[in-house]
Amino acid sequence: MKTIHKFRLESGKALNTLKLKSGYRVVRCEYLVSEKAVFLWVEQSLKVDLPEVERQFLVAFSGEPVPSDYDYVDTALDPFGPEAYHVYQVSHQSEKKDLGSFESRRSDLISAPPFQRVGAA
View (cartoon, one colour):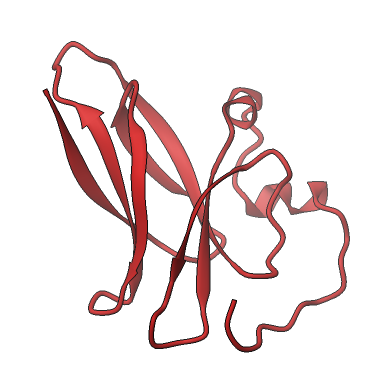
């Protein structure tokens, strides 16, 4: 048997760490106006003998730099505002390298001029 769980993701530079069952699958990402937050729905098995894995997700605004090796998951739109929230998963290679938080990896990014958030995504 399997089920779908809903997880709240915090926006910003902090990584969101989730404990998920091995073999999980992200099925939906949405910005909920009533909660003013991005949520991720994940399908996972109900088998008790499956190991749990820790996975990290980052929520970034449009135009915000994200490390090249992060994997894009989905985009959540604010239906009443101009914001778009892009969800990325820290790649397994990054986790194995143990490179630390997003903030400590900023030096890995290509230098870009400051961006300005305007209008819709």
